[in-house]
Length: 438
Image (cartoon, rainbow, N blue to C red; front, top):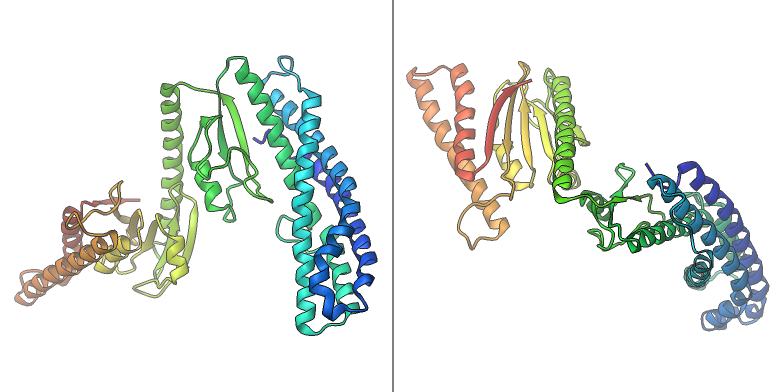
């Protein structure tokens, strides 16, 4: 649950976005008014005069921008502070020092307006430079600049960001909410109560690696930085994450909580994987499905009768994942399966047959360790793959002789040969090999 409600955030974002959009349009009119000074000698003077022209013109918009940003920040600080009070049940225990909040907001607004103007300056400079390179007229460049300021205010949506004004609004509000929460946490800890925090993402495929790492860290003391180095959200403009807070737990409580969460995740992961395996086990062609450590599907791809071919980017996405696939021939792991496991740094590879038999090979917790101590990880993988091929070749040659001599049937060979290879490889490479049923 987010500290500041989603509905409140939308209201705040919409209100501030509207004001920032008007400010961008105002800046556009100011720049448009200043541009004619360059008209007469546009080609010769555009690049050299641009910085001076922009800085001089935009200066008149700074105070109004700072006032808009300051008001938004003051509101956000209050929202963050009071929402966390309600979340922790401390409405009557603490009150926000409003003068301090206003002063922080005023200082932050000056910094943020300067940063926004620097970005605007770079964008408009690129239009001028591009215009010169293409030999565009002054009038065409002026039209492009005017259009871009309009887009700042109302256009060019990208996924959850509707415009640059929207991006500025949600970022300013997030900064303010976070400062309000941090202010209350400081008040609580000053009263002698230790607090802790945890990072939470929206959980979709667009979440950045840094935010995922922050969330994976669980609960940490308020005074510590998250894995990415951030102390609070937002980690970057447009970041959709939030941070939860609570009274610090003891080590024993943390361990108990960790175990409870881990058990729940394992249960969910096992259910998701087995449901997928039951769905694909009767397919006539192979289908590979990769899951992350929490049981969320990373990738699904159909192949041919005896293999699935993955692209380099797909393999990269599967790093550290659990890859399951069906075996239409109803046999265990092939040597190619085992090589794929060690070569591509999977945590586990699984194969399911139409009868519901499930073969699993897991990497050790610390990753693959094979060969001499001085080998690099890449060399260890190379040595491991060489052993897999050697062991598979040895067993296959022996079984072929047994089939020719009549000591074993082909059906029996298929039932025992792959299993023997897998057990030998698991023993030699310190992997965990199991055979179960759905």
